[in-house]
Figure 1 (cartoon, rainbow, N blue to C red):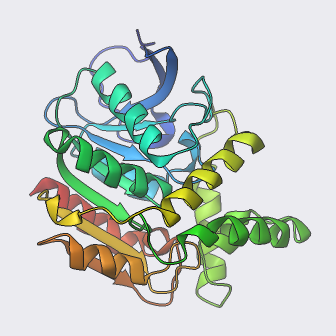
Figure 2 (cartoon, rainbow, N blue to C red; figure 1 turned 135 degrees about the horizontal axis):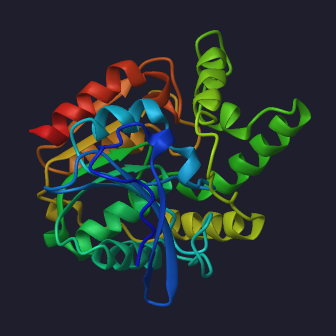
Length: 288
């Protein structure tokens, strides 16, 4: 079922060292990584648009993995996972449930970012019993204002980045100012810390299908978020160009008892720019 590449009981707590594993379910081979101490409820990470396993910031994962069993995965058709990317958020959520159940878990905490948060929101409404706690970062609800414009902004920034040979995330996730530019470079460099056994990059067609799914999500009817009773932590920067920051406030208003953190002078990647501040908040929230 999975490939086990570490001997003995040494707990791996650095994401760059997490073994690459696979599990087969529903005709799909899902690629995933796990680290941290086993046992208890795992924290499953739902990744962003165009991202693979290599896109998680180790400064966020590692502090959580110091205390919790952490699992990251590629959804269907992404990175090293087989199959075709679904063209709806709802189908992506169904795949995530398939993956979680294939690993034998009936209760998880979810940490999500951007597209991952949309998938998490749909999943928690359909399978409330599966989720204990929810972390929603850089994301927004179905029918959220201007979510359907994500594709336009993404293509524009990919073009801007290509002209300077930069990583598009430097434009998409960070403000282009004195605080944002060095934070962007530092973030992109952290993503290179893993040097062996890296994931397959996302294919252009997969990215295009994800963008279609996000556009549909932005144009779909709002869900009843008052049904979400799980403890929920919501975070973003105050100037998110991709998924407008007001949508984090919207989620906070609609999810009873949720906790909201907005970081100043930062964009979509606010949690990465402010990882020193955010990681302890996430660890505390998930540990409570």
